[in-house]
Amino acid sequence: MQDLNAKVLAALEVYLKRGYEALTVLESRGPEEFFAVMRLREAAFHNFRALDAVAIQGGFDMQARPEARRLWNEIDQVNRTLMGVMTEAQQALGEKLAHLRASRVQGQAYRSGTPPVLRLVKSI
Image (cartoon, rainbow, N blue to C red; front, top):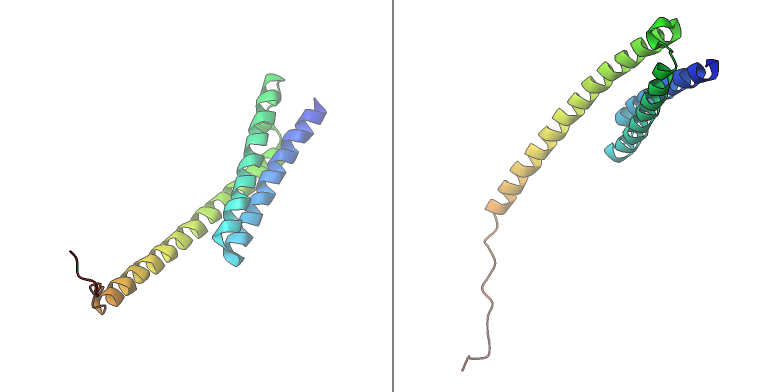
């Protein structure tokens, strides 16, 4: 049972670590790498859920352990920070897309259209 408790806490630590990693990736790199890290983070959460379900069946109470409560508090802080940073990134992306659309409309206003195709051969 002690081994299962350690596995549940280790899964929580991996989930927390990937949350921190997602924050740094979102701020420094690009969205593709961010989504890759978020997929890994989601996998870590599913691993935790599976281990937690087995531990609950064995009588292990996560909330009784101070390490688990500390990890959940840190995870909550990371999740809140991630939500704020993702919202800001989404707004910035929306502004860029709006600017791109406006530029495209302005660029199309100066086009004269496609010239008609000249045919040198007369149709019979």
